[in-house]
Length: 109
Image (cartoon, rainbow, N blue to C red; front, side, top):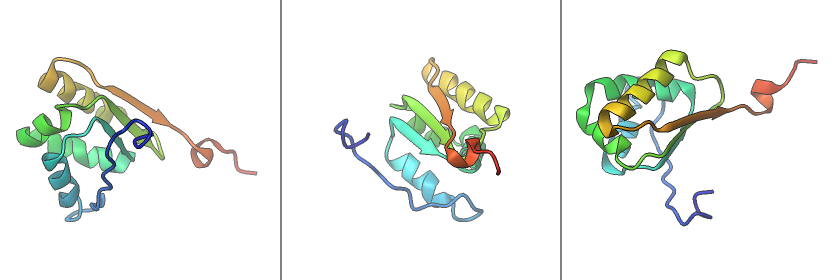
């Protein structure tokens, strides 16, 4: 999708673990993104950082058009926080969506 649209793909080397998420935050401060794809765990850590880091919030929402969460359900408080930060930073909402795959939607047999 990224390459088809003529975009750039940046694969983050951070991990959603204490001490290893700093690489993700550095990346987000350096390069504004228009499409952010991640898991609920990492988005939860991002919400915490956005609450206290104005520089991160400004860069993160500068050109952001879509936040996509996959792998599990994004907790409602995280969804609301991402939405609130978008409005506070840009005056507009950013689309937040999620999807399920076979793991999340499948039935045990």
